[in-house]
Amino acid sequence: NGNIKICFLGDSSLIPIKIAKEMTDCDIIYVLTKKLRSNQTFYNEFGEANNCLEKLVQIDDLSQLPEEIILDAVIAEPYFNNTNLPWDTLHYWYLLTRLKESNHINLETIIMPEKGSIKALPVCFEDLWKIRAKLGTDVEGFDLTDFDEMLEQAMQISDAVIESHSLWEYPCTALTTSPIELFKWNFKTSSIYRDSKFSCSKLINIKNDDQLKNICLTFWIEYYWDDEKWSTGLLESATIGSKLKWNKEWKQGVAFLCSTLCKDFNSDYNILVNFEYIASLGLLTLTHQLSTSSDGQV
Image (cartoon, rainbow, N blue to C red):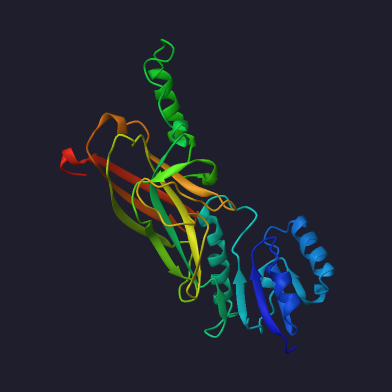
Protein backbone atom coordinates (compact mmCIF):
# COMPACT_ATOMS: atom_id res chain seq x y z
CA ASN A 1 0.00 0.00 0.00
CA GLY A 2 0.97 3.67 -0.05
CA ASN A 3 1.49 3.99 3.68
CA ILE A 4 4.68 5.48 5.11
CA LYS A 5 7.04 2.64 6.07
CA ILE A 6 8.86 3.11 9.38
CA CYS A 7 11.15 0.48 10.92
CA PHE A 8 11.75 0.58 14.67
CA LEU A 9 14.90 -1.09 16.01
CA GLY A 10 14.89 -1.95 19.71
CA ASP A 11 13.03 -3.80 22.45
CA SER A 12 10.00 -2.98 24.61
CA SER A 13 9.60 0.67 23.65
CA LEU A 14 6.48 2.84 23.51
CA ILE A 15 7.87 4.77 20.53
CA PRO A 16 6.21 2.50 17.89
CA ILE A 17 2.90 2.81 19.77
CA LYS A 18 3.14 6.61 19.91
CA ILE A 19 4.01 6.89 16.20
CA ALA A 20 1.25 4.49 15.17
CA LYS A 21 -1.30 6.33 17.29
CA GLU A 22 -0.46 9.80 15.96
CA MET A 23 0.20 9.04 12.27
CA THR A 24 -2.73 7.94 10.15
CA ASP A 25 -1.07 6.54 7.02
CA CYS A 26 1.86 4.52 8.33
CA ASP A 27 3.07 0.99 8.97
CA ILE A 28 5.41 0.52 11.94
CA ILE A 29 7.66 -2.48 11.42
CA TYR A 30 9.35 -3.74 14.56
CA VAL A 31 11.81 -6.57 15.03
CA LEU A 32 11.61 -9.05 17.89
CA THR A 33 15.38 -9.48 17.97
CA LYS A 34 15.33 -12.13 20.69
CA LYS A 35 11.89 -13.52 19.91
CA LEU A 36 10.94 -12.82 23.50
CA ARG A 37 7.34 -13.57 24.35
CA SER A 38 7.29 -10.59 26.72
CA ASN A 39 8.14 -8.28 23.80
CA GLN A 40 5.34 -9.67 21.70
CA THR A 41 2.86 -9.39 24.57
CA PHE A 42 4.05 -5.84 25.25
CA TYR A 43 3.34 -4.60 21.72
CA ASN A 44 0.11 -6.54 21.35
CA GLU A 45 -1.40 -5.24 24.57
CA PHE A 46 -0.30 -1.62 24.15
CA GLY A 47 -1.24 -1.65 20.46
CA GLU A 48 -4.73 -2.93 21.23
CA ALA A 49 -5.22 -0.51 24.13
CA ASN A 50 -4.31 2.43 21.85
CA ASN A 51 -6.36 1.23 18.86
CA CYS A 52 -3.31 1.02 16.58
CA LEU A 53 -2.52 -2.70 16.56
CA GLU A 54 -3.31 -3.00 12.83
CA LYS A 55 -0.46 -0.55 12.06
CA LEU A 56 2.17 -2.64 13.88
CA VAL A 57 3.95 -5.17 11.68
CA GLN A 58 5.99 -7.78 13.56
CA ILE A 59 8.96 -9.57 12.01
CA ASP A 60 11.45 -11.93 13.64
CA ASP A 61 14.38 -10.89 11.49
CA LEU A 62 15.25 -8.15 9.00
CA SER A 63 15.50 -10.79 6.28
CA GLN A 64 11.69 -11.03 6.41
CA LEU A 65 11.32 -7.55 4.94
CA PRO A 66 10.03 -7.80 1.34
CA GLU A 67 12.79 -6.98 -1.15
CA GLU A 68 10.85 -4.16 -2.77
CA ILE A 69 10.33 -2.15 0.44
CA ILE A 70 12.27 1.11 0.78
CA LEU A 71 11.90 2.45 4.30
CA ASP A 72 10.93 6.07 4.80
CA ALA A 73 12.46 6.15 8.28
CA VAL A 74 14.42 4.01 10.73
CA ILE A 75 13.98 4.96 14.38
CA ALA A 76 15.50 3.62 17.61
CA GLU A 77 15.81 4.58 21.25
CA PRO A 78 18.21 2.64 21.06
CA TYR A 79 17.70 -0.01 23.74
CA PHE A 80 17.85 -3.81 23.74
CA ASN A 81 16.90 -6.19 26.53
CA ASN A 82 20.42 -7.63 26.71
CA THR A 83 22.05 -4.19 27.11
CA ASN A 84 24.63 -4.15 29.88
CA LEU A 85 27.53 -1.91 28.86
CA PRO A 86 26.80 1.37 27.03
CA TRP A 87 28.14 0.23 23.63
CA ASP A 88 25.82 -2.79 23.63
CA THR A 89 23.26 -0.37 22.21
CA LEU A 90 25.42 -0.09 19.07
CA HIS A 91 23.59 -3.23 17.96
CA TYR A 92 21.35 -0.60 16.39
CA TRP A 93 24.23 0.28 14.01
CA TYR A 94 24.76 -3.37 13.08
CA LEU A 95 21.07 -3.66 12.15
CA LEU A 96 21.24 -0.42 10.16
CA THR A 97 24.16 -1.83 8.19
CA ARG A 98 22.09 -4.89 7.30
CA LEU A 99 19.30 -2.63 6.05
CA LYS A 100 21.79 -0.76 3.87
CA GLU A 101 23.23 -3.97 2.43
CA SER A 102 19.73 -5.23 1.54
CA ASN A 103 18.85 -1.86 -0.07
CA HIS A 104 15.94 -1.20 2.27
CA ILE A 105 17.21 2.32 3.01
CA ASN A 106 18.61 5.02 0.77
CA LEU A 107 19.82 8.63 1.02
CA GLU A 108 16.24 9.83 1.48
CA THR A 109 15.57 7.56 4.46
CA ILE A 110 15.37 9.40 7.78
CA ILE A 111 17.71 7.87 10.38
CA MET A 112 17.08 8.62 14.08
CA PRO A 113 19.42 8.79 15.91
CA GLU A 114 21.82 9.74 13.14
CA LYS A 115 25.05 9.93 15.16
CA GLY A 116 26.58 8.46 18.30
CA SER A 117 29.74 8.84 20.35
CA ILE A 118 31.49 7.03 23.19
CA LYS A 119 32.58 9.39 25.98
CA ALA A 120 34.91 8.88 28.94
CA LEU A 121 35.66 10.91 32.07
CA PRO A 122 38.28 10.27 34.78
CA VAL A 123 36.75 10.35 38.26
CA CYS A 124 37.56 9.65 41.89
CA PHE A 125 35.00 7.43 43.67
CA GLU A 126 34.18 7.74 47.33
CA ASP A 127 33.66 4.01 47.85
CA LEU A 128 33.34 2.00 44.62
CA TRP A 129 37.12 1.80 44.18
CA LYS A 130 37.32 -0.42 47.27
CA ILE A 131 36.10 -3.47 45.30
CA ARG A 132 39.51 -3.43 43.54
CA ALA A 133 41.69 -2.14 46.40
CA LYS A 134 44.26 -4.37 48.09
CA LEU A 135 43.82 -5.28 51.74
CA GLY A 136 47.51 -4.86 52.61
CA THR A 137 49.84 -6.11 55.30
CA ASP A 138 47.94 -5.16 58.45
CA VAL A 139 44.31 -6.29 58.67
CA GLU A 140 43.57 -6.82 62.36
CA GLY A 141 47.20 -7.87 62.65
CA PHE A 142 47.17 -10.21 59.63
CA ASP A 143 49.32 -9.87 56.52
CA LEU A 144 46.98 -10.51 53.55
CA THR A 145 49.54 -9.88 50.80
CA ASP A 146 49.25 -13.47 49.51
CA PHE A 147 45.47 -13.14 49.37
CA ASP A 148 45.80 -9.84 47.46
CA GLU A 149 48.10 -11.48 44.90
CA MET A 150 45.80 -14.48 44.46
CA LEU A 151 42.80 -12.19 44.03
CA GLU A 152 44.67 -10.02 41.51
CA GLN A 153 45.54 -13.07 39.40
CA ALA A 154 41.93 -14.28 39.52
CA MET A 155 40.61 -10.87 38.44
CA GLN A 156 43.03 -10.72 35.51
CA ILE A 157 41.68 -14.06 34.30
CA SER A 158 37.96 -13.60 34.89
CA ASP A 159 37.05 -9.90 35.24
CA ALA A 160 36.48 -7.54 32.35
CA VAL A 161 38.71 -4.47 32.16
CA ILE A 162 35.57 -2.33 31.93
CA GLU A 163 32.71 -3.23 34.27
CA SER A 164 29.11 -2.01 34.20
CA HIS A 165 27.72 -0.11 37.18
CA SER A 166 24.77 2.15 37.89
CA LEU A 167 26.89 5.17 38.77
CA TRP A 168 24.09 7.24 40.29
CA GLU A 169 24.44 4.86 43.26
CA TYR A 170 28.14 5.58 43.76
CA PRO A 171 29.19 9.19 44.55
CA CYS A 172 32.22 10.39 42.62
CA THR A 173 33.97 13.62 41.66
CA ALA A 174 35.39 14.71 38.32
CA LEU A 175 39.17 14.77 37.85
CA THR A 176 39.05 16.79 34.62
CA THR A 177 36.67 19.42 33.31
CA SER A 178 35.73 17.92 29.94
CA PRO A 179 34.68 14.39 28.92
CA ILE A 180 36.96 12.70 26.40
CA GLU A 181 35.38 11.73 23.09
CA LEU A 182 36.79 8.34 22.10
CA PHE A 183 34.81 7.63 18.95
CA LYS A 184 32.07 9.40 17.02
CA TRP A 185 30.12 7.77 14.18
CA ASN A 186 27.57 8.89 11.63
CA PHE A 187 25.23 5.94 11.31
CA LYS A 188 23.69 7.19 8.08
CA THR A 189 26.92 7.57 6.13
CA SER A 190 29.04 4.78 7.66
CA SER A 191 28.63 1.06 8.23
CA ILE A 192 30.01 -1.49 10.66
CA TYR A 193 31.16 -5.02 9.81
CA ARG A 194 32.49 -8.02 11.70
CA ASP A 195 36.09 -7.15 10.83
CA SER A 196 35.69 -3.46 11.78
CA LYS A 197 38.01 -2.11 14.46
CA PHE A 198 38.26 1.44 15.78
CA SER A 199 41.31 2.58 17.74
CA CYS A 200 42.48 5.75 19.47
CA SER A 201 44.93 6.89 22.16
CA LYS A 202 44.35 9.60 24.75
CA LEU A 203 46.78 11.24 27.17
CA ILE A 204 45.08 12.23 30.42
CA ASN A 205 46.63 14.53 33.01
CA ILE A 206 45.35 14.28 36.58
CA LYS A 207 46.17 16.95 39.15
CA ASN A 208 46.98 15.30 42.46
CA ASP A 209 45.89 16.67 45.83
CA ASP A 210 45.24 15.44 49.34
CA GLN A 211 41.75 14.24 48.36
CA LEU A 212 42.84 11.99 45.47
CA LYS A 213 42.56 8.36 46.53
CA ASN A 214 41.84 6.56 43.24
CA ILE A 215 41.67 7.14 39.50
CA CYS A 216 38.90 5.50 37.50
CA LEU A 217 37.58 6.00 33.98
CA THR A 218 33.84 6.15 33.46
CA PHE A 219 32.20 5.51 30.08
CA TRP A 220 28.86 6.18 28.44
CA ILE A 221 27.40 6.72 24.99
CA GLU A 222 25.65 9.78 23.59
CA TYR A 223 23.20 9.80 20.69
CA TYR A 224 22.31 12.74 18.47
CA TRP A 225 19.08 13.71 16.72
CA ASP A 226 20.07 16.68 14.54
CA ASP A 227 21.43 19.15 17.13
CA GLU A 228 19.79 17.45 20.11
CA LYS A 229 21.97 15.26 22.33
CA TRP A 230 20.78 12.40 24.50
CA SER A 231 23.21 10.99 27.09
CA THR A 232 23.12 7.55 28.70
CA GLY A 233 25.67 8.75 31.26
CA LEU A 234 26.69 12.20 32.46
CA LEU A 235 23.73 14.60 32.63
CA GLU A 236 25.42 17.85 33.67
CA SER A 237 28.69 19.63 32.94
CA ALA A 238 31.66 18.54 35.04
CA THR A 239 34.10 20.69 36.99
CA ILE A 240 37.13 19.37 38.82
CA GLY A 241 36.08 18.21 42.28
CA SER A 242 32.36 18.49 41.54
CA LYS A 243 29.87 15.74 42.30
CA LEU A 244 28.56 14.16 39.11
CA LYS A 245 24.96 13.49 38.10
CA TRP A 246 24.33 10.30 36.14
CA ASN A 247 21.42 8.98 34.11
CA LYS A 248 19.55 6.55 36.40
CA GLU A 249 17.96 4.67 33.50
CA TRP A 250 21.24 3.24 32.20
CA LYS A 251 24.34 1.50 33.44
CA GLN A 252 27.70 3.07 32.72
CA GLY A 253 31.15 1.54 32.24
CA VAL A 254 33.98 1.76 34.79
CA ALA A 255 37.69 0.95 34.46
CA PHE A 256 39.78 1.02 37.65
CA LEU A 257 43.10 2.50 36.58
CA CYS A 258 44.63 3.28 39.95
CA SER A 259 43.10 2.33 43.28
CA THR A 260 46.14 2.07 45.55
CA LEU A 261 48.98 4.21 44.19
CA CYS A 262 47.52 7.70 44.58
CA LYS A 263 48.21 7.94 48.30
CA ASP A 264 51.88 7.09 47.75
CA PHE A 265 52.75 10.09 45.53
CA ASN A 266 52.30 13.83 45.77
CA SER A 267 52.96 14.59 42.10
CA ASP A 268 50.50 14.79 39.21
CA TYR A 269 49.63 11.83 37.02
CA ASN A 270 49.94 11.28 33.29
CA ILE A 271 47.95 8.36 31.91
CA LEU A 272 48.29 7.18 28.32
CA VAL A 273 45.25 5.08 27.47
CA ASN A 274 44.86 3.05 24.26
CA PHE A 275 41.29 2.17 23.28
CA GLU A 276 39.96 -0.28 20.71
CA TYR A 277 36.38 -1.13 19.80
CA ILE A 278 36.22 -4.63 18.26
CA ALA A 279 33.06 -4.97 16.18
CA SER A 280 33.07 -8.77 15.99
CA LEU A 281 32.90 -8.94 19.80
CA GLY A 282 30.95 -5.74 20.46
CA LEU A 283 33.70 -5.02 22.98
CA LEU A 284 35.63 -1.91 24.04
CA THR A 285 39.10 -2.72 25.38
CA LEU A 286 41.82 -0.56 26.86
CA THR A 287 45.41 -0.69 28.00
CA HIS A 288 47.09 2.07 29.95
CA GLN A 289 50.44 3.33 31.17
CA LEU A 290 50.57 5.46 34.28
CA SER A 291 53.38 7.74 35.43
CA THR A 292 53.86 10.71 37.72
CA SER A 293 55.27 14.04 36.62
CA SER A 294 58.44 13.22 38.54
CA ASP A 295 59.04 10.22 36.25
CA GLY A 296 59.61 12.53 33.31
CA GLN A 297 57.91 10.19 30.86
CA VAL A 298 54.83 7.99 30.42
